[in-house]
Length: 74
Image: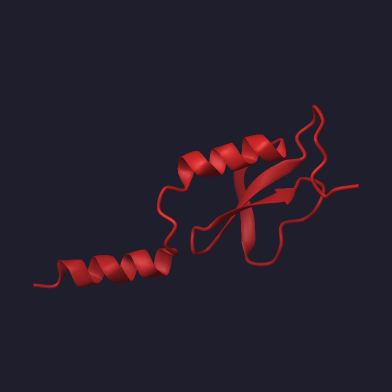
């Protein structure tokens, strides 16, 4: 039996970490340390499609901020 069972009930939720990186996690398990619920649940496929839509910049948050600071220096 897989951690992510395909049926009519939501089997996965989208989780996000402090670096704004996304993953999926079984709805029946507590979020792993360092991650929290991103507010979306559904089938594995639906969750992966959601992540595809919202995670448009794969760089970790800390790297994005660092690159913005470098870009704004005169």
